[in-house]
Amino acid sequence: MIPTKPYAATDLGIFKFVDGKLMVYLMELTIEAYVGRLALPGTLVLETEDLESAVRRNYREATNRSNAYFEQVYTFSAMERDPSRRVISTAYMAFPDKDETFTPSSKYSSGTWHYVNDAPPLAYDHDQMLKMCTERIAAKLNYTTIALLLLPPAFTLTDLQNVYEQGFGETLDKRNFRKKVLSMDIVEPIGRQRQGEQARPAMLYKAVRREMEMIPLF
Amino acid sequence: MIPTKPYAATDLGIFKFVDGKLMVYLMELTIEAYVGRLALPGTLVLETEDLESAVRRNYREATNRSNAYFEQVYTFSAMERDPSRRVISTAYMAFPDKDETFTPSSKYSSGTWHYVNDAPPLAYDHDQMLKMCTERIAAKLNYTTIALLLLPPAFTLTDLQNVYEQGFGETLDKRNFRKKVLSMDIVEPIGRQRQGEQARPAMLYKAVRREMEMIPLF
DNA sequence: TCAAAAGTGTTTATCGTACACCCATGC
DNA sequence: GCATGGGTGTACGATAAACACTTTTGA
Image (cartoon, rainbow over all chains, first blue to last red; front, side, top):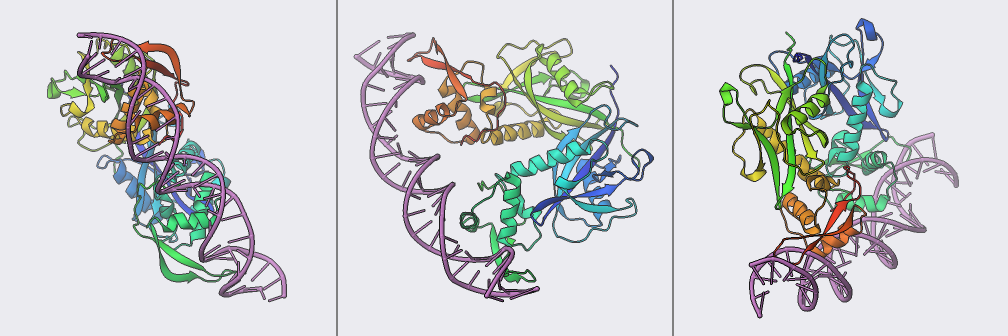
């Protein structure tokens, strides 16, 4: 009947949507047991901080950026999730506020974007964490404006439609989709067009409010 | 830059729906700093168990029963949430599988059911926890059969309607509600009626499947 | 001139909503 | 016999779904 005093940790799924597919930012581990393996960026929680502070610090360390939307997803506590010591880790997800290139700080050897559906098996229980994050994202497509956080600040309506189609696993009618989205006051045209495609240029839009809103969409 | 090694804990919101209102099971604390205050049942996580094991053990200790639906809600980690020591606690909620009287084991002096809207301020950060639980319940009314878990095994359609009306904070049309619910294959009549009311007896129903299902209702 | 994606309205079907009266029981 | 909650159907309006062609650009 001895209470455990585990390490507390956080792991962070950082997501964006590119080319009609969800991407996650993964770090290459350098510690001996997992050298070369990929994992979500994570850190132990320090004596002086709470979970959310640790997550924000970890985000800065992994990306050299500081603004994002953060959300707690789930706490993982299986006995053997880290074979070397008892660690209870809370998974968060993050959606960067801008689409810039990340340059991880010295703590990490390298970070790279991976298509979620194409990522190799991850270290620890991070496959489970990644799965819970993607399920949460898919669920939230139904009743929030999370899709707008997955896209860069300027996007086309086809980009947005791709997020929903990918999340729902089904195709949507283009005219009905646009009618719906435009009637909801969640996006507005920025008056520019996307150049350089080998087709007719698409009008660019931005989110009216860059927050997660509770608005039923579909 | 010293990693924290906090105690890990769980706290458990146990809920049921009675007389058109949500109830939560609260324990009276006996420890010095909080003597006489009410709190959710909670326990430290032991060296030999993960969070869900601790929650199930805690449920047995608090109720002397063992079957319920459990769901992780949120992990609370504020520095001063327990003034006496660093504790990171994961809140779960539970819905008993039957409606029996609880008799807490010796660990607890007493446990009592309280109407959520009528509960006194709780110890620690348990008011926050309770709020997150009730918000989660309200949210899940929209896309799961959680309402069926809040009711006893036999209930009337008016009971069920009360759950939704309370959760949504609005009244629903009786005929439309019944039409909808009965068309969904989630409840079936058990052929008995509720006796003893000072009015026409109501037909009793049971859940077709006593699980949380993802089914959009309203 | 061809390929590739953007953009645009109308019609139909489905679903949600509004609405009022009789019934069975206990007191 | 009266008060209390139980139980039932239809008509209308709103929303969702189906559906095809023209436009603009780069190669």
